[in-house]
Every structure is written in structure tokens, then in C-alpha cells.
Length: 186
Image 1 (cartoon, rainbow, N blue to C red):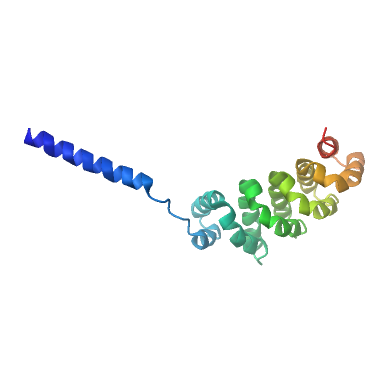
Image 2: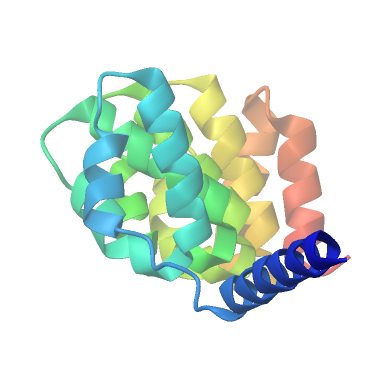
């Protein structure tokens, strides 16, 4: 009987500790350390940091903006891809992403357009840069830009003439027509 009581007491104590642990405040992410990990040469470290920064949301955006504006093209693209995963929670980075649409690296221009695409109407301030990017020499960039404009919807009204032009001569015809319909609210 004594052994049973001791075991039950131990189980009760463990349960109380577990419940107390569940009530404790979740640990705040160390955003500066995660940003440093996002720059790591180790793909696994970068991947974990990417996911943790997406979970951190708005708290991570200033560090990602710094990466977008930094000198390393690989880091700029990595930051844009992380912002893609955040969607609208990364909207403070819209001006930096709009600037990245002019990057020398095609992959970075694609990543910037995709991040803006995933932000939907929150990316509306980037419309002028997206319109300019409709003339990018790379078809994949133009494709992602068209999708981004369509996802922005009615706030991208100024893009309708440029999308109409793109629909006439560019292989993005169907996407451009769909984007125009979305912008017009149809």
C-alpha cells in the first residue's frame, strides 16, 4: 500500500509539473540568432531558421528587410523566400521586395514577385514596381508578376493597361487575362 501511495504521489507531482509547464509562457524566438542561422552555409540550419522565422511573423520582418537590402545576393533571395512563407504578416517588407524586383539575379526577382504574390492586397504599394517588372526579360519573372498583380486584386487597377499589353505579346496571356478579371472583381 505504501508503494502504491508513493507511486501515486509521484505521478500526481509529475502531472502538476506538466500542467504548470503547459501554463508557462511560450519562449520568445531569438530573432537575431535565427537571422544569423538563415545566412548559414548549412542547408539544414537555414531550413530550421526559415520555419522558425515564418512562425515568428512580424517580429522577424525587420531582420529580413535588412537581408533583402544587403550586399549578398544569396541572402537577399533567402529573405524573400522566407517572406513568401509569411504571406501578409510580412507586409512591412513590401517596399524592400518591390526594390528587389530590379535585382540583377533572376532568382531574386522571382522570389520577390512570389513573396508579393502571397501577400495579396497587402502588396498594393508594390503595384508601380510590379508594372515595371512586367517588362522583365525573363518569362518566369513576368509570370510571377502577373500572378502577384492578380492576387492584389482591385488595388492593382493601374496595372490593367500593362496587363492588357502583356496579354497580347507575352506567353503569360492566360494568366494576364485572369489577373485582369481578378482586378476588376470578376
